[in-house]
Length: 153
Image 1: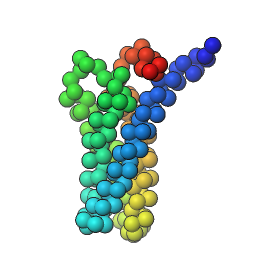
Image 2: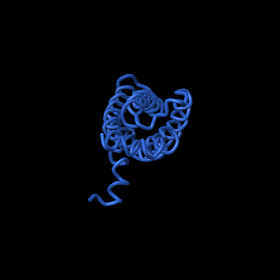
Image 3: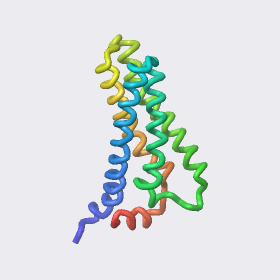
């Protein structure tokens, strides 16, 4: 017999695993694009990281909607509402991401590629925790029975 705690955590664990896979891919995409935009194209640190995050966010939306939280997508809700909420949450996530980048660059004068990359990773880490909570809470909501059924898949 499976404990009630395991039964309650199973849907979250399944979503979290899928979220991490999608997020891992988008993390690599974001990190590589930020580096290229900053040091190959020559954009400023805030602009480079903002653009890379926006592109990775678009890819993330598709992956999370079609896979990570597919069982939570209510077909009766308009996709426009999902995208609007997703955009607002990711705008907040973008600000969270940019704080360490800007602190490192503008306050600490740490302008090396390593400092830029590490500060971006730190910001992305904080923003990821916020996004997972916010996606589950506001964007990809569903009835509990749908989440339980999806956990069995």
